[in-house]
Every structure is written in C-alpha cells, then in structure tokens.
Image 1 (cartoon, helix red, strand yellow):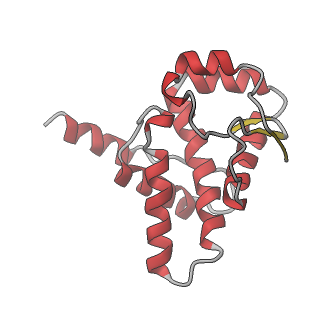
Image 2: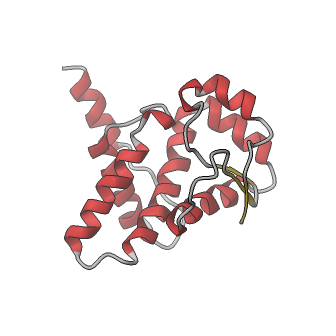
Image 3: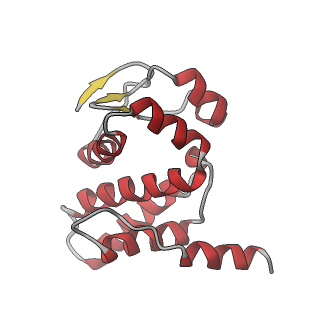
Length: 157
C-alpha cells in the first residue's frame, strides 16, 4: 500500500459523519492508498489493518465509504475484521498468552473508541475480535451478535 500525507477524496463527507475525528492522527484507506493527514508513524499492524479495508473496498471504494458512514452494523463488521488483522500482526512479537491478552485489550480499546462511533464497550470489542478469529481464522471474519445482545440487555437494566 502507498502512504500519502494528505486527506482522502471525500474527507469533507467523512468529517460530517464523524466530526470528532478532526485534527486527530487517523489513517484512511482508499483502495491501495493509505491517507495519513498527520504524517504519523504507520507501524506494520496498522498497515495490515488498512490492507483489510483495501480488500473490503474491492472495486467500489466510494460505495464502501458511503455504506461505512451510514450503516453502523456494516462499519462494525468491517472494523472487527480489520482489528483482527491488526491484533494478529501485533501478536507476532508477543512472548506469551499474557502479552497477547494485553494486546487484545489495546486493540479492543481502539475498536470501542469514539473514533468509530463508540459502537461497543471494550470487553465486547475484545470478545468480538477473539471470537471472530476463533470462529474462522482462515476465511472471512464473522461477527458474533451474542456479546452485543448481552451489552444491550445490560444497558436496559
């Protein structure tokens, strides 16, 4: 993937949906290009994360972005898959299960962050990432709805 210091073509539209990302060090995948407006360091696990989005976008980058912005369920599925890849790349250097668990918490915290719309809590994000990898490590990532349903039930108490 090429890394370009600048904004993606529809940054103004993205900002309307996610106004809290303005002036944040955030990467944007646009096909084979990673837009890096803040010129931040892009470690290998983040390249893997963005490469998943490149694959997801296929031949319809603009359509993917519009659906990503409008459909929270779609966005969550896309991000769980990308965060799985990021976590697996981070685990390449992990020495033991404890380190992998700490890395999962870091990646789960990112998935639950306001940047993505605070779609899930950290524990739920961790369960979704781990569950998706356990369910199908060789194919497409499946998002298990059970942790989300439990989270919603807890909110209703």
